[in-house]
Length: 275
Image: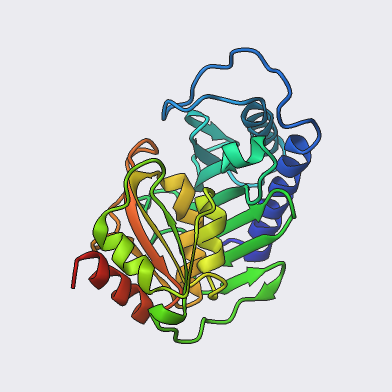
């Protein structure tokens, strides 16, 4: 399959712009009645449906390649004529509780994988993560580097844990002692509740690392951002340092460690293991 890489990323950016326009066009807390729950059991909000409608229309009418869509908003769907050339894993509104309250960040994440390949962080070919409130956009192509608003993101310089800002998410669970020991060594600690954007911030070292031990982080939250991180020299694995497995469903949750540099990643994994 011969693909115009710039054209693919152009379409991802256009789709993000359409999603952003749709979900920012009305008050985030507008009444919408009972909309049910998505495949993960989370309540569906009006902006989820607005984004899904935009995505369906764009993939059916404007996206040049046949594509199979995997999204938390519904069952797998196929668009275009012929066999799919790509699988798109999409989270149209990541950090939906943030978005509903106008708390930044909240974002959109898209990962494109060649059809016929297993779905995992090693097979993502193109990625986009966009910040809905600001329009800030991270993009990447496997082997082609990562970009922030069109500018190349350089690899992060080496940084010790003691000089790193670490993001973490434990949701409402109690933080395990090993995590607290790791965080106590960091220069600073943050929690944003919008994994896709936070992981994008790890690419290039704006944040040193992100740790999610909830077991609730699902693939649409991290697949796109993982390519950004690896393209800038970082590392993304399961919390125990093992490779993340192939993905069969978007309802399976994961525990994850992502860092801007391999050495920081190793230090975090060792610390979480109590070493």
